[in-house]
Image (cartoon, rainbow, N blue to C red; front, side, top):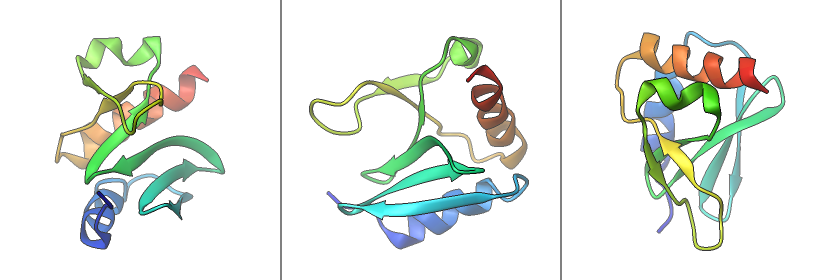
Length: 94
């Protein structure tokens, strides 16, 4: 199932406190980048972030974006400050 443009706009609004966020549409889904670094995506209208040991403390739920892919974490918070903290934590771990 493809993700909606409306959900992309919702997620981009959550990421509004971060500069240099871009996205690429791929096969009906959206890949998310910060300063050209792939950190997550939108799959089936779910906001997912790549896994990292740093993110364990956030107790995020694991999900598979599509068959044969590696697991990722679901970001289901609607708080822009919390979302920013999670994304920054991931980026600082790579």
